[in-house]
Image 1: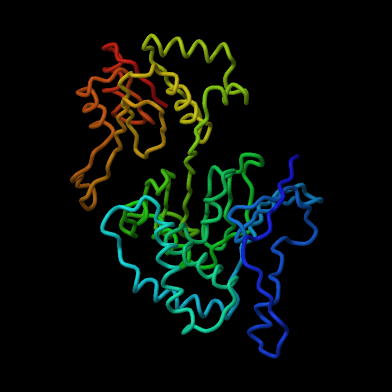
Image 2: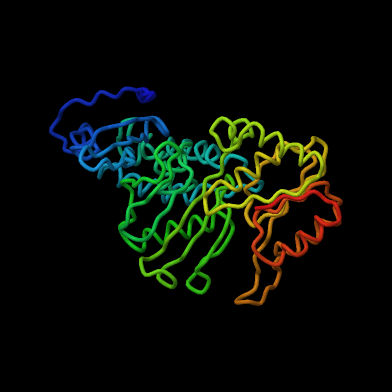
Length: 381
């Protein structure tokens, strides 16, 4: 197993002399290690240096593997300054008039200038403390909050929280489903986090509408069951992370999903506009297989993808992505709703060579199979 070396923090070294000042002594004390005693460290790697790192540990007695997040925390003095600077940032940072491609970069630039402005009036702190304060401000305001370090881990495919005071679980590419040392201590903290995630996706959640399926920034898929309306354990959510560099057909051959002969046969089917349906259980890799096969479609072909949440990522230029939309009305009014059924019908007017439906599970199957019967190529899961 390859062990990754953790680089030293790229921060200015601050020498703090021992003094009678309790605040200075508190800053000088190193934080305790989050790794429980008696567990063997299997692997370590950085997430966002120097603020967050991960240790994969294993119990020598049971063999259980756990995911331990080591994140720099604020001490009491830093927390007081953080609360004050947070109010200042919220008051002074104006919403941009145009769309920002990189909100984190925008926030970092604005926050740094504001901190430099109020740094003296807020009291003396070493540079290390200010870096920590700005990190937590960025994490909580424009990031994903408490789970932000997990969202930075490229090895994680899924993040799931089953309820309040329950450990968060992740699906790790190397260790599969493992327990983390993160949990939400109260209903208020968990509910606030979920409401923030839903708002980041441009949707709304409440006790009247407790079920939400949405796409987070970065095309990560979010599923929410809100409060105790439908689950006795409190709010639950699952995030399926979007892979920026999707698996190619070569990758799937190398890991044994497809044989070379099978991939060649499916490629020939696509060249001749055959229809392909990918079947499998939940999280079996249906969309991954569909995406890799779709990359074999001839360049220049008119491709239309139809999904409830954007998951497919194709390299073709002649590609139209259609996404379903929920109703704007209350209850079952259906006002403004654009269902998969409507999108499949609409796509026929775009003269597609290949029509791809991300997931067929309703009446849209009727229109899809009618389109396939006319000779259009089609793919679905």
